[in-house]
Image 1 (cartoon, one colour):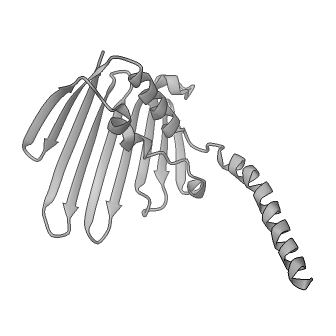
Image 2 (cartoon, rainbow, N blue to C red):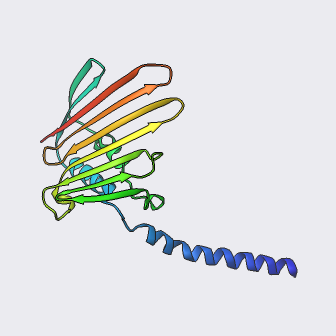
Image 3 (tube, rainbow, N blue to C red):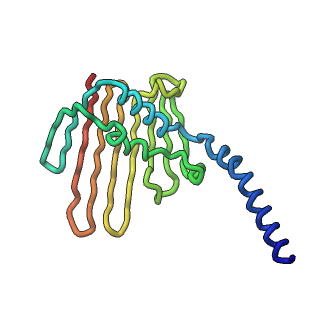
Length: 185
């Protein structure tokens, strides 16, 4: 009987905890920062519905290659921007926000975070996604194996982006990689 009582109490606690999970999940859905993930997912959705082609140039050191892609995996092309979303519950107090004129800047106050800076330039002070003109993101990764500095720039009105990455492997020289994409309708 004692064992049945303990089982009942354990079962009741599990049920109560399960009932509270959706409330916590709903609270974490509130966005503290501009929702980059949603913005770029919407951009990807719009590009997937269009018949646009991609002019893509990749530079590695002194080598350059340009291709015009008719069939494009837009989600893959813009994934690096989606991944830079800073709307994580654990990061709510990890970024300082500065709003000046038509610009919002989020600057990390924790040097261990990959995304160190997000700068959003708008066409007006309404700060609405449809008025977003330019996104600039600065990422960094430092560990025993390599160091990486990355600047992502997305120009929404021009339908183009630039990803510039400098990476240095512990046993080698620094390498600069630049990827430019331009959407053509």
